[in-house]
Image (tube, rainbow, N blue to C red; front, side):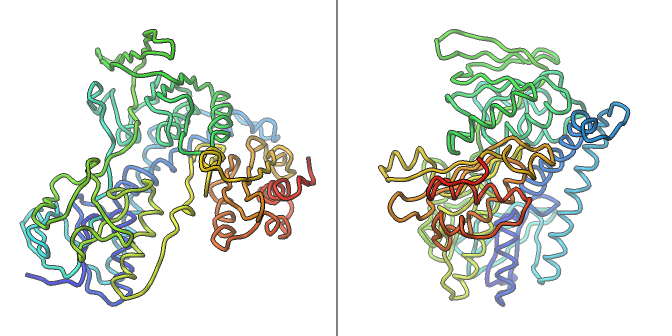
Length: 465
């Protein structure tokens, strides 16, 4: 039986990053993946393929709606959906092969098969052949999977999860999306740009509820311009299929039953930890009522040498959060003293315009009774935004009323996913709103809006509004 310093179950962003960092730090490392390609949900059926389709659909939308104004005359563009899906598959293949290259480069042993515990240090791998390995330390990085509603079982044809939504053979005529969260809105926006009628049903009275409420309002306003219809405060009660038609029934906020008919229904009401088949009981590892692996502040389970990271533990289900946790565990095992400030992990919605956020929302500050001040700046006031015709959006900076320390930054606009990094760096070093207001920002750029919003929060002195 081969012995390792550390073995990782799952090769998603958390697992493969943990493996690389462990190998860099001199540990003999193994990684176990049940599928034939590395990268987990994110690289295979999540972050990467969805961004490929988001970009393709946005290029089509730009060509269709904006080229003429830019002075580019072309025949009306047509959607070659088969090519879009093919390009997406190519991006995924290239990315997953890149992870395999990194495993080889760092001399990490890769085992293909379902990994499970046979003891505190012994892992069984069920693949083409059954194998066993022994590890001094073990990291659980098995990720998550889509939540299935009891009355809306995935048939993977017409009643689908995000996985199937990335592999459709046609653009839907009418896509009904259950859930106004990140995944539903991203995929809904893809198909709305490509010509589908899209209807979103959301149980709460706002979309993207984990974000600052102002961001949800701005995003909904933007997506309505694509033709997306929103039905908030709607409780879905049934989903049925007859042939190629799906009927979704719901109760609106008045308690009345309403019905929606479409040819596809995307159920995107969240994800749940994937712990099936791990046999954690054999190692004495405990799960909570949500089937998450229970961990302490150092991501140790009830067994000190067994760790868990990413979607399978508490906290936001974000690839970069998993990566940070994988790095943290590897460095802890090497005797270092890393840390993660979970308040400073950014969150992004990759619609267009994009939405990005870090720190506290205005609603959280009110609930926590923190005295704060707020500064906002509209993207349409930027020369760069007008030049590119990306004028939708706003940036909000929240700062402590007394100290001026930045408490949260929330933005919707072009390249918000990239711009949020400035806010993360500022907050990591506990910068004040005035610090950002005093820093020179290149002109013309989108990031000037961050500075202007900081100016508005500092002394209510933005320059360009």
